Image 1 (spheres, rainbow, N blue to C red):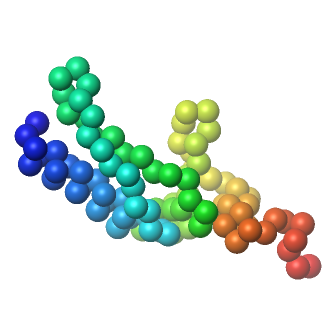
Image 2 (cartoon, rainbow, N blue to C red):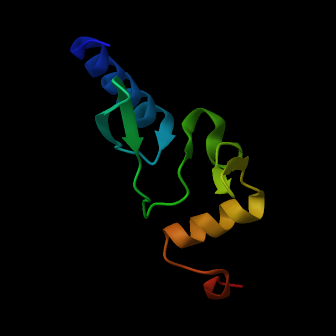
Image 3 (cartoon, helix red, strand yellow):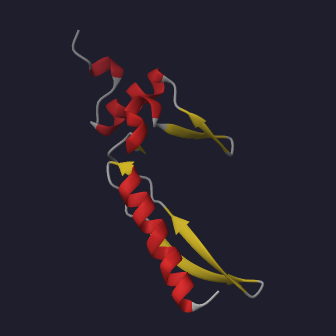
Length: 96
């Protein structure tokens, strides 16, 4: 992989993440060499504006969570919990 291909890959990944997610995510991207091959490493730090979701799918359908090394669609109650966490509130603080 050439330096130009690596740069293009980094840029493409950054743009895809930034353009596809809400709220906006700015990933940390680095290149590492493993077994003589250039690998693009993408790191996304946990954010405070939960939930983060795929913009084109909307908040309810586009929110996913990690469960034991797998990615799963977040159930409605979990999305609501994430919304509350993102506003620093909990269900017991909700007005009734």
